[in-house]
Image (cartoon, rainbow, N blue to C red; front, side, top):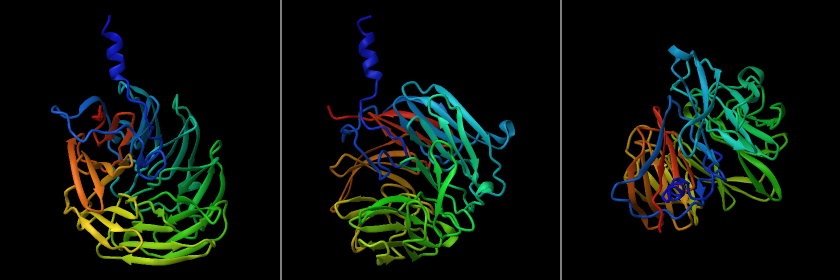
Length: 414
């Protein structure tokens, strides 16, 4: 009996930020968690639990004692459906599931849903690969509202399906849908799901969510569509500014970043663009572009102290100056293997340059990034091959593949 309280304390995760949305609490790839040890335990990382999962690209999100993701059950048993699952963060036991019909047809890479779920004020907000937008009760999984935007808003489905995670601003949900004839972004009422307004002149949908920013005392959106990069007003109206940028196969995938008054997008086929934004609404000028050596894909670049770190398709992890595009170093594919679609999620772990990364091989890598170069502390195999973004909360990491959702304990400095 004396040991029971000690065991309970051991099993409880350390108090730290949750992971309620794609790319973390602020949506910028930063996480203020406990200090992760730079030494890997002799026995490796401890797996706390495993939950059997079906295929999908949807990342993991979690808040308090719940972990959420999406998958696609076998069609021969369940028909053509997409599914939301909620499991207990401590035990891995399933809490509830929610399924809905979703016919993929000729969808390329059609093994499962793409977008991560967004958790906000007791709601689970989702966007399926075929354009189904919905809100569920986070505790019970009860459907609050559900819409088929492909039919209702004439949304333009990208080749590889809708992938934009819901972005919440005040009492509205922003979705990158490419509504026709005009409406790159739809704003839905958080409580009812009804369309409040729409904005954006690109008639096709990109894969990344819009980025809300403040500029000149105003809130606006940066939206990267398949044909242009746009500055858009909140509440609707004409484009504030736009920079033409037509990308091959419409692969406007990585969410833009905005630092030092500069908007940066990193494309796969057509490279990167940096845009200087001034104080006035229409003040936007192309600062620099690189179509050969700064070609990203799915992974958003990380920013710190004037430098960006990007998984570049030809040279691997690449460090470059935001203001100039000057490349300082590459890691020669040390972080993740070279290939047609190199992928690794990058998350700052604290403010000292240490970062956590789950690569395409399913390895969790703890490393340090600086102007001087790439320095690896350790790496550990968590899951099979994956493109899905993991979640970090307390002293734990939650990662998924096409077969399982796993929880591991991070080693902490004493």
